[in-house]
Image 1 (cartoon, rainbow, N blue to C red):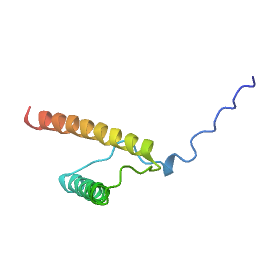
Image 2: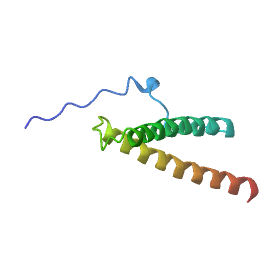
Image 3: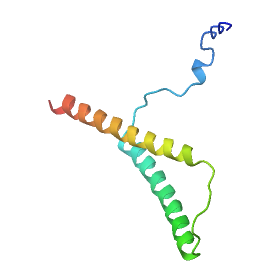
Length: 92
């Protein structure tokens, strides 16, 4: 089996989204509002399925949805840890 060539230095590093970003209460509120809107859309779809008495539908992107939900859980855990650490630094 041939060896894989080493990837060149990250020339696209400037195009990447940073792993860590500062959040204030306004930015976090915007995230929460977006999640509420998405939850409302999904809730409406569930009601529509119930009202139309549709047993089930097959939807593309299911795995992507589950990964996204896991990422939201991880983000919430990381945010809670960051807030806890910030409070400890501020109030000792």
